[in-house]
Image 1 (cartoon, rainbow, N blue to C red):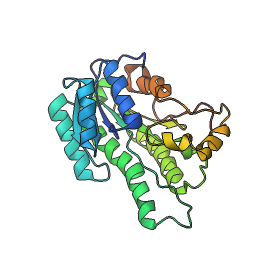
Image 2 (image 1 turned 90 degrees about the vertical axis):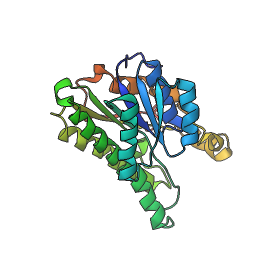
Image 3 (image 1 turned 90 degrees about the horizontal axis):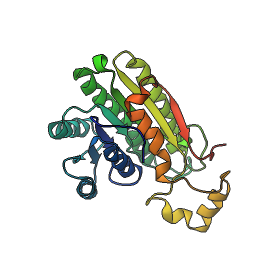
Image 4 (image 1 turned 45 degrees about the vertical axis):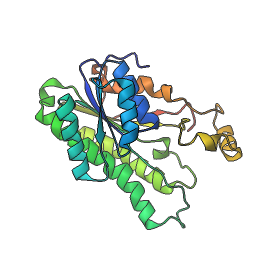
Length: 253
Protein backbone atom coordinates (compact mmCIF):
# COMPACT_ATOMS: atom_id res chain seq x y z
CA UNK A 1 0.00 0.00 0.00
CA UNK A 2 1.13 3.55 -0.75
CA UNK A 3 3.11 5.37 1.96
CA UNK A 4 1.75 8.70 0.69
CA UNK A 5 -0.97 10.56 2.55
CA UNK A 6 -4.06 11.34 0.46
CA UNK A 7 -6.20 12.61 3.33
CA UNK A 8 -8.52 15.35 2.14
CA UNK A 9 -8.30 14.38 -1.52
CA UNK A 10 -11.25 13.35 -3.65
CA UNK A 11 -10.44 11.08 -6.58
CA UNK A 12 -12.27 9.96 -9.67
CA UNK A 13 -10.93 6.73 -11.15
CA UNK A 14 -12.14 5.35 -14.49
CA UNK A 15 -12.03 1.68 -15.39
CA UNK A 16 -12.53 0.89 -11.71
CA UNK A 17 -14.71 -2.19 -12.11
CA UNK A 18 -11.73 -4.58 -12.33
CA UNK A 19 -7.96 -4.95 -12.39
CA UNK A 20 -5.78 -1.92 -11.80
CA UNK A 21 -8.68 0.47 -11.34
CA UNK A 22 -9.95 -1.50 -8.37
CA UNK A 23 -6.45 -1.59 -6.92
CA UNK A 24 -6.05 2.17 -7.32
CA UNK A 25 -9.34 2.72 -5.50
CA UNK A 26 -8.25 0.50 -2.63
CA UNK A 27 -4.90 2.21 -2.13
CA UNK A 28 -6.47 5.67 -2.36
CA UNK A 29 -9.03 4.90 0.34
CA UNK A 30 -6.35 3.24 2.48
CA UNK A 31 -4.31 6.45 2.17
CA UNK A 32 -7.21 8.58 3.40
CA UNK A 33 -8.95 9.73 0.21
CA UNK A 34 -12.56 9.57 -0.85
CA UNK A 35 -13.05 7.97 -4.24
CA UNK A 36 -15.59 8.03 -7.06
CA UNK A 37 -15.17 4.74 -8.89
CA UNK A 38 -16.34 4.96 -12.49
CA UNK A 39 -17.04 2.31 -15.12
CA UNK A 40 -19.79 0.88 -17.30
CA UNK A 41 -20.21 -2.27 -15.19
CA UNK A 42 -22.05 -0.73 -12.26
CA UNK A 43 -22.76 -4.10 -10.64
CA UNK A 44 -19.03 -4.58 -10.15
CA UNK A 45 -18.74 -1.04 -8.80
CA UNK A 46 -21.43 -1.72 -6.20
CA UNK A 47 -19.36 -4.61 -4.86
CA UNK A 48 -16.28 -2.38 -4.64
CA UNK A 49 -18.14 0.41 -2.84
CA UNK A 50 -19.49 -2.11 -0.34
CA UNK A 51 -15.94 -3.28 0.28
CA UNK A 52 -14.45 0.21 0.65
CA UNK A 53 -17.30 1.73 2.64
CA UNK A 54 -20.18 3.89 1.41
CA UNK A 55 -18.82 7.00 3.12
CA UNK A 56 -15.46 6.58 1.43
CA UNK A 57 -16.45 5.48 -2.08
CA UNK A 58 -19.22 6.24 -4.53
CA UNK A 59 -20.10 4.38 -7.73
CA UNK A 60 -20.44 6.33 -10.97
CA UNK A 61 -21.77 4.96 -14.26
CA UNK A 62 -19.48 6.26 -16.99
CA UNK A 63 -18.70 5.38 -20.60
CA UNK A 64 -15.49 7.27 -21.40
CA UNK A 65 -16.23 7.22 -25.14
CA UNK A 66 -19.17 9.54 -24.55
CA UNK A 67 -18.62 13.16 -23.54
CA UNK A 68 -22.14 13.37 -22.17
CA UNK A 69 -21.57 10.28 -20.03
CA UNK A 70 -18.27 11.65 -18.73
CA UNK A 71 -19.89 14.97 -17.77
CA UNK A 72 -22.83 13.21 -16.11
CA UNK A 73 -20.42 10.99 -14.22
CA UNK A 74 -18.50 13.96 -12.84
CA UNK A 75 -21.79 15.65 -11.91
CA UNK A 76 -22.86 12.57 -9.93
CA UNK A 77 -19.46 12.19 -8.27
CA UNK A 78 -19.26 15.82 -7.17
CA UNK A 79 -22.83 15.83 -5.93
CA UNK A 80 -21.97 12.90 -3.68
CA UNK A 81 -18.41 13.70 -2.66
CA UNK A 82 -17.69 17.34 -3.46
CA UNK A 83 -15.12 18.79 -5.89
CA UNK A 84 -12.80 16.31 -7.60
CA UNK A 85 -9.15 17.32 -7.23
CA UNK A 86 -7.47 14.14 -8.44
CA UNK A 87 -8.18 12.00 -11.51
CA UNK A 88 -6.78 8.65 -12.62
CA UNK A 89 -7.74 7.99 -16.25
CA UNK A 90 -7.35 4.24 -16.24
CA UNK A 91 -10.10 2.99 -18.57
CA UNK A 92 -8.69 1.13 -21.56
CA UNK A 93 -9.12 -1.83 -23.87
CA UNK A 94 -7.27 -3.95 -26.39
CA UNK A 95 -8.11 -5.96 -29.48
CA UNK A 96 -5.35 -8.28 -30.61
CA UNK A 97 -5.07 -8.60 -34.39
CA UNK A 98 -2.55 -8.17 -37.15
CA UNK A 99 -2.72 -4.80 -38.89
CA UNK A 100 -3.73 -6.46 -42.16
CA UNK A 101 -6.63 -8.21 -40.45
CA UNK A 102 -8.07 -5.82 -37.87
CA UNK A 103 -11.49 -4.43 -38.73
CA UNK A 104 -11.47 -0.66 -38.97
CA UNK A 105 -14.35 -0.59 -36.49
CA UNK A 106 -12.14 -2.40 -33.97
CA UNK A 107 -9.23 -0.04 -34.65
CA UNK A 108 -11.53 2.93 -34.05
CA UNK A 109 -12.87 1.34 -30.86
CA UNK A 110 -9.38 1.02 -29.38
CA UNK A 111 -8.60 4.65 -30.24
CA UNK A 112 -11.93 5.91 -28.93
CA UNK A 113 -11.64 4.21 -25.55
CA UNK A 114 -7.90 4.60 -24.97
CA UNK A 115 -7.18 8.04 -26.40
CA UNK A 116 -10.49 9.86 -26.72
CA UNK A 117 -11.58 8.45 -23.35
CA UNK A 118 -8.42 9.63 -21.61
CA UNK A 119 -8.78 13.05 -23.20
CA UNK A 120 -12.43 13.48 -22.21
CA UNK A 121 -11.75 12.28 -18.67
CA UNK A 122 -8.74 14.56 -18.19
CA UNK A 123 -10.37 17.59 -19.82
CA UNK A 124 -13.55 17.46 -17.76
CA UNK A 125 -11.52 16.92 -14.61
CA UNK A 126 -9.30 19.90 -15.41
CA UNK A 127 -12.26 22.15 -16.14
CA UNK A 128 -13.71 21.39 -12.73
CA UNK A 129 -10.38 21.73 -10.93
CA UNK A 130 -9.88 25.16 -12.48
CA UNK A 131 -13.41 26.22 -11.52
CA UNK A 132 -12.71 25.11 -7.94
CA UNK A 133 -9.53 27.22 -7.71
CA UNK A 134 -6.68 24.86 -8.62
CA UNK A 135 -4.58 27.80 -9.80
CA UNK A 136 -4.52 29.12 -6.25
CA UNK A 137 -4.14 25.80 -4.43
CA UNK A 138 -1.83 23.99 -6.87
CA UNK A 139 -3.37 20.68 -5.78
CA UNK A 140 -4.83 19.44 -9.06
CA UNK A 141 -3.56 16.00 -10.06
CA UNK A 142 -4.26 13.99 -13.23
CA UNK A 143 -2.65 10.62 -13.90
CA UNK A 144 -3.05 8.91 -17.28
CA UNK A 145 -2.43 5.16 -17.44
CA UNK A 146 -0.64 4.16 -20.64
CA UNK A 147 1.54 1.05 -21.16
CA UNK A 148 5.04 -0.04 -22.10
CA UNK A 149 3.37 -0.42 -25.49
CA UNK A 150 3.71 3.37 -25.73
CA UNK A 151 7.42 2.92 -26.45
CA UNK A 152 7.89 -0.81 -27.08
CA UNK A 153 6.49 -2.81 -29.99
CA UNK A 154 4.13 -5.52 -28.74
CA UNK A 155 3.55 -7.93 -31.65
CA UNK A 156 -0.02 -8.08 -32.89
CA UNK A 157 -0.98 -5.00 -30.93
CA UNK A 158 -0.37 -2.14 -33.37
CA UNK A 159 -3.64 -0.38 -32.56
CA UNK A 160 -3.10 -0.72 -28.82
CA UNK A 161 0.52 0.45 -28.91
CA UNK A 162 -0.36 3.40 -31.11
CA UNK A 163 -3.16 4.41 -28.77
CA UNK A 164 -0.92 4.22 -25.72
CA UNK A 165 1.80 6.27 -27.42
CA UNK A 166 -0.95 8.82 -28.01
CA UNK A 167 -1.84 8.76 -24.31
CA UNK A 168 1.79 9.42 -23.38
CA UNK A 169 2.00 12.48 -25.64
CA UNK A 170 -1.46 13.59 -24.54
CA UNK A 171 -0.24 13.69 -20.96
CA UNK A 172 2.77 15.83 -21.82
CA UNK A 173 0.66 18.16 -23.95
CA UNK A 174 -1.97 18.66 -21.26
CA UNK A 175 0.72 19.19 -18.64
CA UNK A 176 2.19 22.02 -20.73
CA UNK A 177 -1.22 23.55 -21.39
CA UNK A 178 -2.22 23.53 -17.72
CA UNK A 179 1.20 24.13 -16.14
CA UNK A 180 0.13 27.51 -14.79
CA UNK A 181 -3.35 26.41 -13.74
CA UNK A 182 -2.30 24.42 -10.67
CA UNK A 183 -2.78 21.03 -12.31
CA UNK A 184 -0.03 18.41 -12.63
CA UNK A 185 -0.49 15.84 -15.39
CA UNK A 186 1.67 12.73 -15.53
CA UNK A 187 1.64 9.36 -17.29
CA UNK A 188 2.39 5.87 -15.97
CA UNK A 189 3.43 3.11 -18.40
CA UNK A 190 3.05 -0.24 -16.63
CA UNK A 191 4.47 -3.50 -17.87
CA UNK A 192 2.59 -6.78 -17.89
CA UNK A 193 0.76 -7.27 -14.60
CA UNK A 194 -1.21 -10.37 -13.73
CA UNK A 195 -4.89 -9.46 -13.46
CA UNK A 196 -8.14 -11.35 -13.86
CA UNK A 197 -8.16 -10.38 -17.55
CA UNK A 198 -4.85 -12.00 -18.50
CA UNK A 199 -4.31 -14.59 -15.78
CA UNK A 200 -5.50 -17.53 -17.89
CA UNK A 201 -3.18 -16.61 -20.79
CA UNK A 202 -0.07 -16.43 -18.67
CA UNK A 203 -0.76 -19.88 -17.26
CA UNK A 204 -0.94 -21.35 -20.75
CA UNK A 205 2.03 -22.45 -22.84
CA UNK A 206 2.01 -19.31 -25.00
CA UNK A 207 1.91 -17.03 -22.00
CA UNK A 208 4.68 -18.96 -20.28
CA UNK A 209 6.87 -18.55 -23.37
CA UNK A 210 6.17 -14.83 -23.43
CA UNK A 211 7.03 -14.50 -19.76
CA UNK A 212 10.31 -16.31 -20.39
CA UNK A 213 11.37 -13.42 -22.64
CA UNK A 214 11.15 -10.93 -19.76
CA UNK A 215 14.54 -10.21 -18.11
CA UNK A 216 13.22 -11.31 -14.70
CA UNK A 217 10.98 -14.00 -16.20
CA UNK A 218 7.98 -12.97 -14.16
CA UNK A 219 4.89 -10.79 -14.21
CA UNK A 220 4.50 -7.71 -12.11
CA UNK A 221 2.01 -7.63 -9.25
CA UNK A 222 -0.73 -5.02 -8.92
CA UNK A 223 0.93 -3.65 -5.80
CA UNK A 224 4.04 -2.73 -7.78
CA UNK A 225 2.26 0.46 -8.89
CA UNK A 226 1.16 1.55 -5.42
CA UNK A 227 4.15 3.80 -4.81
CA UNK A 228 4.10 5.70 -8.10
CA UNK A 229 0.32 6.16 -8.05
CA UNK A 230 0.38 7.35 -4.44
CA UNK A 231 3.18 9.79 -5.18
CA UNK A 232 1.59 11.28 -8.30
CA UNK A 233 -1.74 11.80 -6.50
CA UNK A 234 -0.23 13.30 -3.36
CA UNK A 235 0.97 16.78 -2.43
CA UNK A 236 4.48 15.31 -2.54
CA UNK A 237 4.41 15.47 -6.37
CA UNK A 238 4.08 19.26 -6.34
CA UNK A 239 7.11 19.67 -8.65
CA UNK A 240 6.34 16.77 -10.99
CA UNK A 241 4.35 17.39 -14.16
CA UNK A 242 4.65 16.34 -17.80
CA UNK A 243 6.58 13.19 -16.89
CA UNK A 244 6.14 9.70 -18.31
CA UNK A 245 7.07 6.97 -15.84
CA UNK A 246 7.81 3.41 -16.94
CA UNK A 247 7.18 0.84 -14.19
CA UNK A 248 7.68 -2.56 -15.79
CA UNK A 249 10.08 -4.69 -13.73
CA UNK A 250 12.58 -4.27 -16.57
CA UNK A 251 10.31 -5.91 -19.17
CA UNK A 252 11.11 -3.31 -21.83
CA UNK A 253 14.88 -3.52 -21.37
